[in-house]
Image (cartoon, rainbow, N blue to C red; front, side, top):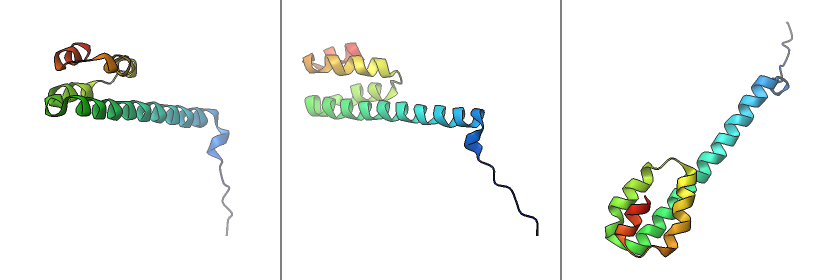
Length: 87
């Protein structure tokens, strides 16, 4: 019976780069989703039932820098109107 040769795909630069890029994107996506969840919980605890519309807007934001900006401003927000302005 013929013996099959095993191939180590990690030896191929292109494959290794693709895996590394995928892992980096996965971590970035995870950070973004975690930040969104934290902001959502904070907004809900601050404004209760009134937070429904702002939370909907928050969920649509894909730019992590925008989410970080919101996180910095959120502690100073006193009203739903102020919150909607930064979203």
